[in-house]
Amino acid sequence: MNELDLHGVRHDDVDRLVENFILLNNPPLTIICGNSDKMKSLVKDVLDRHDINWDMWSHNTYKIF
Image (cartoon, rainbow, N blue to C red; front, side, top):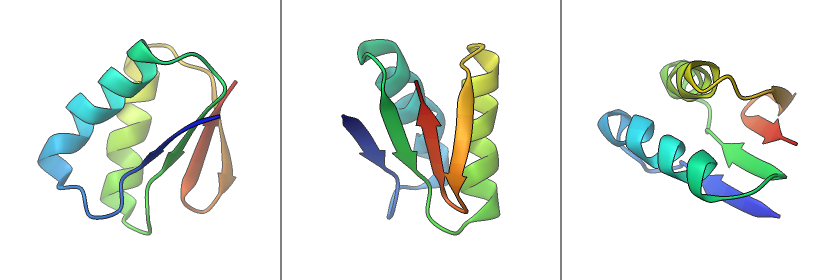
């Protein structure tokens, strides 16, 4: 399973990293956001923009199938 861990990543870099990750990899995918509400919101915005179906598996982890 492919995993993107965003711990330590700057908010300015999230859009590009998440977009590249979801477009260049096949599901299932996991994106770990950390505890930042802003980080979770940024990730959700990218997933929604690309019409990606996702589930929140814990307080900081998105799963894409």
